[in-house]
Length: 225
Image (cartoon, rainbow, N blue to C red; front, side, top):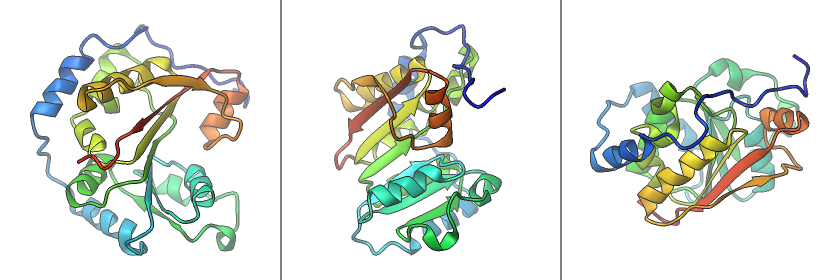
């Protein structure tokens, strides 16, 4: 497949899943009590070890090879930027700059986001900005429970505060994220198409250059807990 010939996620599901709202309400009403792995507690500690305790925090959730983390650290030089991914191979992949030129206001950690989000929500600190970027959909109808808006961890995402930004090349995913946030926050959460003139990730660049429509939502969660 050539570089600028990627496909939009294929799915028989053309709109918000009929069971999404019920799942979100269930997760909001019933605590998620899965044990947290020690390795993820250690990752949480590593993520904050270089933080001065004062700089606003940015979380790049599922950062992949980390290009977005680097760009965010350069865009927000007075913030501490945490890039989290479950794959050590992706995190170790060669970056587009020599190590000496990488921003010093960021850190990469390997962790399971389900645990990492909960540790942040339960132990702090709150976020200033939170990015959930590509690739994110599980497009089959039966994949609903694997998407973050329908996952038991979703209420913890809402408790992290700050500005949450989700981007996707599948409109259904962003619409579901918006509905889940609406149920959690008690207010409408708009979403939109956008041009991505400066792509944050390699996937965003590829999708954009393939002529796909890109979607995003930005929700101000404030100092929510």
